[in-house]
Length: 494
Ligand code: ADP
Ligand code: G6P
Image 1 (spheres, rainbow, N blue to C red):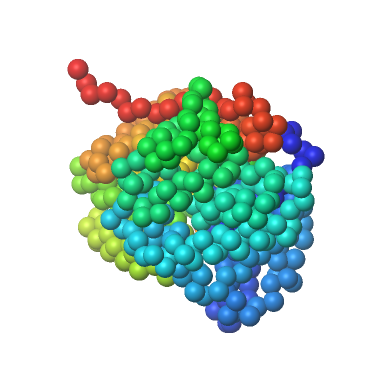
Image 2 (image 1 turned 90 degrees about the horizontal axis):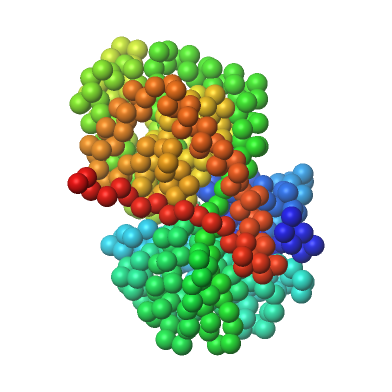
């Protein structure tokens, strides 16, 4: 395995666990949600190391974190080191700069950005705090791997502190095209900060190409050269490499757990309540990038246009609570609930409600049972770095007969486009047709497609991802950048 002698230090805004106050006022620990945590936890379990991140509490909470974090990592094989923020830092850095500027901007939604200068200054201050934490822990041979858009300036802070470790960064979300990135008031600074790393990893070719285009346009003294799928930027006497490393999942673990007796029983029980019906499944964090209202409208359109679907299909839409304090997220919840009510009001009959809606964080067993038993996965984000839900569904589809309907703008499509049904998440009628197509598809075709999907997701799993990244970063094997296809939509009919 690549770079096994080096200690791995993972740095991300979130630790794999969140500490929060329970309904009765006690401090509790629960697993974090989101693709970053799901992907990185098995990597650290496998290799050991240290994970630096924010546990979700603020200084003002005055909570004793040590016993809680110790209990969370007792059998995990790695250590956690918390960075605690003040309330002001949480608001301006996490909620403000990360989630009200970079998150919408990098998902092409500049009109949702609040370019508040105070956000940026706190972002820098918190990135400095993370850098200090790294300096405190890192030995000269440790490999420091920084993750995601919350921490784009940590490496520059480390360089200013004369920290000499090799530094690598992986962006879990998309990188926007030049004309959108240009809107960022701190565009030069953020790009230069990213270029303080030695290796930059992106999810798709689209993201790497956008980044390279921004560097070419905005960093005057950078010399940029591309060879195959790798780009090298020469700047101030250093070489910075940028490549595409599509993140994977711990496929075997998901498949094993989905096949367990406990999950099988739960799956059977879920389907028993929907006899002779196909279950369509949606699993999304509450987020406007996930396209949940459009998905519901498409489901309604399918029921209107294809009456043969009545009583024959049901949509289980699971929405995982997320970024709750941001008003837009709360508004989205209201919109989703209103739509679910309208659809059920229009079509329900005795014994059949077309949409079953869950707004809560399910136990892993329940989530896996849903993945295992659902006949169709419907995942239609406007834009998504990868979308691990699509890969997890395939891993758990141990009967190999499910269908994946996937957005053209999810990073996962690059690896899954040959065997899924692709949709434009803004095309309500097109999505409705895909919903019908999935319903009508023969068992033979479903099996053929699902087998191919499972093969490629098993091969390009999270350990393949981490090995190819570490080979490129630590062993400097620049020939080991994986070959990743690019998805290009079908041309217009002649
Ligand atoms: P994002 O990272 O934007 O949330 P992804 O689809 O890449 O989107 O990842 C979502 C992750 O959240 C998946 O790994 C999924 O298993 C996980 N997840 C889904 N439901 C829950 C839940 N109830 N609790 C914790 N994690 C969940
Ligand atoms: C996405 C981001 C992660 C983030 C997760 C959950 O997956 O890429 O960095 O942790 O969403 O969001 P939250 O704001 O709760 O950390």
